[in-house]
Length: 217
Ligand code: CDP
Image (cartoon, rainbow, N blue to C red; front, side, top):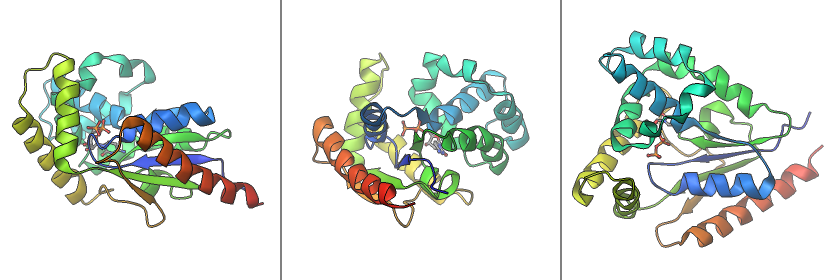
């Protein structure tokens, strides 16, 4: 049977993948899962409960109890939450605890857009359309710095560049579900693109994948 039309959008921090993913969700009328938000919530809630973020069983217990209602806290969008997320995301028990929720989303009969690090490699390798969105570390740091200072955070560009390097290394170097493009993902480097240009390029990639998907029985 033909798989549902799922679009996976993976890539490193501040590469533009969230913007690309929400643009595609609007164009195709698909629900979107921001899987990073799940890890952010686990990181923040574990820290708030006083756990050491290296304590895998404690973080996994938080992940198992996570519900959709827990995901609205604005603190999950902060710089500290991104760092906490990538620390708890190295634990296989945390990833396992968040897996069913992501699989259920990926298997929605009407299709979905999945945004993250491992959506095309681990959660939905059968997705008909896969993108891997990148940009240079300097461009990503500039974008993230603008975003966080607009949210009122007091942080320098140099600190954000260092955060990005650390997070790339941790997310790409972990043993369980490391951040990397699926073999059949199309790479989209947004370093020199405006939001509109990145959205257009992503749409063209997905249109080609959709035509192939439509022609299969
Ligand atoms: O917005 P940004 O790209 O900075 O981060 P995010 O997508 O919200 O993800 C935060 C962190 O969660 C990442 O640095 C990863 O460590 C982790 N993550 C993951 O391991 N797997 C995913 N599918 C999504 C996020």
